[in-house]
Image 1: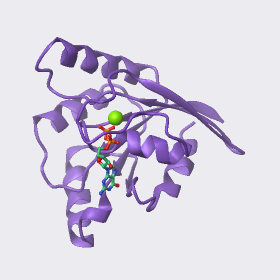
Image 2: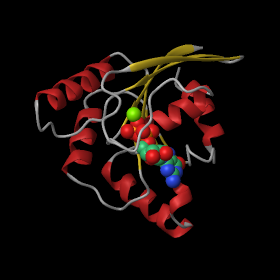
Image 3: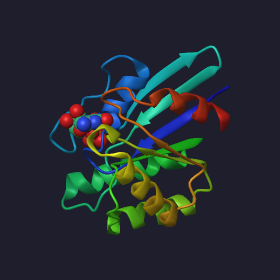
Length: 166
Ligand code: GDP
Ligand code: MG
């Protein structure tokens, strides 16, 4: 099996950290400063069951300037070329205009979408459950996987889930 997976989500949710963790090497640049990843970065994950090309996208967000506009365009174009989308979020119950915008876009693509709730190391179980509930109401996700990319919690569920849809 082989295919393309795009990692999308707000700046700073941990997209680059997750990709680095899955690949096992520092390839994408991670930073505390939002929008460090200016262009899409491709990395290839190979295992016995197949090959996944990860596309780390700049955050989809409301553009405030020309560079921001360019980054949004790159992210949106990326989505048209992939087999699976990983939407990375933080364990929060806050859904803003940005999330609704992403949900609307995903609806028209007809692709499998896995919601990855990252940074579960920063909250308790109850908050994780509330976040899952909140996001279930926003979009019909094919799977919801709570993880900590930084600590490597539950991240082993991600690759098998992606392979299912390739
Ligand atoms: P990106 O903008 O979505 O690519 O986000 P980055 O991967 O650059 O991460 C942004 C910040 O969040 C960095 O300081 C990371 O160390 C931190 N971060 C990423 N994943 C986790 C996590 O699972 N738990 C915690 N506590 N911090 C995380
Ligand atoms: Mg990044």
